[in-house]
Length: 177
Image (cartoon, rainbow, N blue to C red; front, side, top):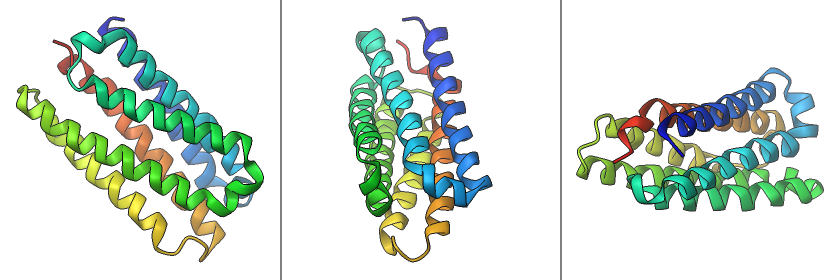
């Protein structure tokens, strides 16, 4: 897989994640009913893209193992969301929080690997990793307080993950050796 294809795939994943996030923010009532579907599909596509990029660029890409780990966890969580929708509304803050904590930690750790290899822009991955970890932590604080807040939180989380994916697309040329 060349750099252009990986950039396009990450951009597509980012656009889908942002679109799902905007849908959650625009209509919280509808989002509560269909939240697990929005989140599950967006996460599934994002995880599959990370796994494909790992498979195609493993030997030539800095930090490819983190893309694989993030992709596998994202696919597993998305399948759980898609096949257990009745349970999802109760567990969504915890599932999303785990996803964001793991994904943010992976991006944070990966950023220092990028720094070690002299990749410009590595600080953006550090910053987004911290933002994602904080968003994940906040989802654990009071998960049942208000379902509309939950919808907005999921919308914001999806938008943040989409921005990170688009950031990967923008900086992917720096990741290839």
